[in-house]
Structure formats: structure tokens, C-alpha cells
Length: 323
Image (tube, rainbow, N blue to C red; front, side, top):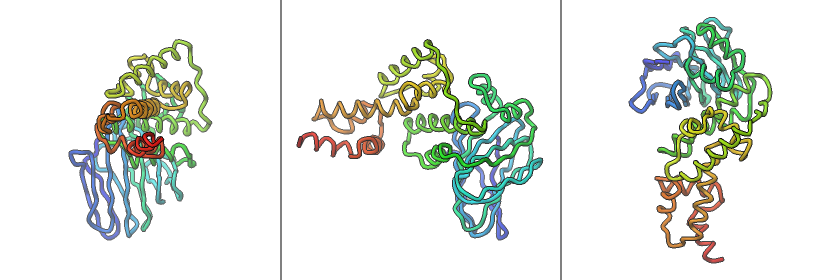
């Protein structure tokens, strides 16, 4: 999608804003306030984070191209309202955590939000090449296949709530990592969200994938590469390419073997290495420990460590000394 701007409109006023150099729109004047943020995840896939509130009922619309073949998979996390897309009946949601599917199909699309409620949404926009890659590598539900085959097919559907989709979308709405660590985390979470959205759209529980012995050997090799490159790990795409698997397949296999995604395995290895370093080298400053396990920002390291062990690294070190 090539938006020139987004319009927020209510009965008492309108505002038109374009993305700034960092891919962000901020609405600050008028009866509504909020933001839209667009971040590339990988070629052909973009992540949108949106949040807003208005004292009056309001409508949000994109200005610019809505190319045929582009597909939006999103989650309405808060608020209530409707989606009006030409060629489809009005879609309604009244409670949080509702996934939705929307083909752009060169048509007018409007999100109508109720007054006085906080509204937030996380969406993934997929271009035809990205959809084709998914179809070839992992398969896609019939409705997504239909959009891929006919880019002008009008599709608009709000789905039943899904706990895992809502949790992953909420994580992406409020990221906890910045910089290169944040980019890896965002890519891993976004692709995991996409996998669960597609599973949910297929109207069935995810089917456990069968892995060949060759695939499992390559996944173990990928895991070894990850834990030996903690300071500068490969991206999800890069790691997948090295072991000749798709990123989604690699994440599925990591969950099968290790009970966590690629990013989860990286985080686990970093925390274990940090704990070991602090036990073995008690004189090593915390910022050096953070750097050695791949954190450029000490604050990100402290946050991750506290989440994993329940105490900060400094507290952990002091407790070990007392013991």
C-alpha cells in the first residue's frame, strides 16, 4: 500500500496527516488524538500499529493507492466500530481481540470508530510477492489463495476472537526492545503473529508439522549458530537462508525441538550466558556483561534479565556474593 496520508474525520472536524521520516503519523489537534506507525518487517510485509481516541464518533481512511493483491491481516485490540469496504457488507466488532481480514483491491475502505473509547489495532500488510512466497513455502488458507489468484477480489471479514493472536498483537503494540534487538524481536513476533492469524483463518487448530531428519539436523545447526553468535546474531531471514528453511518453518521446528521460537531461543541463550558470566567473573561490570551477550543498551539487558529471573542482574550478583 502506498498511502499519501491518513484522514481522521468526525462531525466536528477533520485532520489529514502524512507519515514522517520515521514512518509515523501523529494526530494531536481536534477532538481526536492518536497515532499510526508503519514499520517494514521484511520484503513485502509491513507492520502497522495504531491507537486513538475521540470525543465524537470518527472515521479513519487512507489516502493514496490501495493496490490489487495486497492483503491486510489485523487485530482490533480495543474499542468498537465497523469496517466499510466497497464490494462487501459492513463488518462489525464490539469487543477487543477480534482478528480481521481485508483485501485492498483498489477500493474505498473506512474504519468507523465509536466515540469515547480507546481504540488500538495491530495489522500486517502483505504484498502479492510475500503472499506468493507463503503459498509456495508453507501453504495458505483458501481465502488467502483466492486473493492471491484474483487481486481484485473484495474480501472483508471480522473473525471470532483468538487468545494467541490477541496476545501477540498486544506484544507488538507495546514493544519492550529497541535498536537491533528490537528489530529481531519485532520480526520474530510479527511472523509468529502471521502464522497464528493464518491458522485461525483456516478455521481449525494448527496442525503439528512433521519434520524430516534432515530438517531437524539443520534446525540443530541453526540453534548452534545462534548460541555461538550472541553478540551479533543473524536475522531470522538470514538464519533461515543458511539452513535452507523458510522463516516460518524454522520457527515451527524451533518450537517443536526447543519449545520456543528462534527469538525465544536467542533470549534464553543470552540469559544463561549472562548468569554464567556473572558467577564466573564477579569483577566484570554489568555493561560489559550486557555487551558480551548482545545488548547495546544496559537498560534493555536489565529489563530482560529481571523478566527472566525475577530480580535485576545487580541484585542477583549481590545475592550470590552473600550466599
